[in-house]
Length: 159
Picture 1 (cartoon, helix red, strand yellow):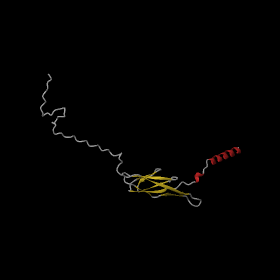
Picture 2 (cartoon, helix red, strand yellow):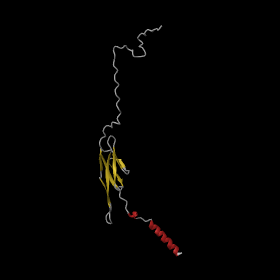
Picture 3 (cartoon, one colour):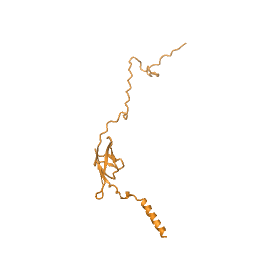
Picture 4 (cartoon, helix red, strand yellow):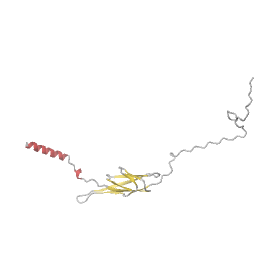
């Protein structure tokens, strides 16, 4: 009976070790405060991985590996995109790891949108040419219906 208990305990111990990972000891990256600004203020600033706000503002985020972008949009202004780099410094036994975002604050200068492109404009209709006025022609001469004030032409007989 002792052998069965010893084998069961050893089996459970080995099963637990097989699912053991060192990821449990890696600290999660600390959240970072990111300042977002635009010229003019009031633009919608959206990061490429989700968080957004109206400038000037700040968002708290867990910076992704590598870099990301911040897209700015505002009515009557051209959109702008600013690349952002994430710089991680690994820690050691005595110092904690650090995460820096460059640039911080992220500032975009939005340019006014010009007139809409030609394809988006409504095409102009050409003006209709005026008909030449002929003083010699009798009024209603070109009409299929005679002028009511004018006498009817004499009926011709073909006998």
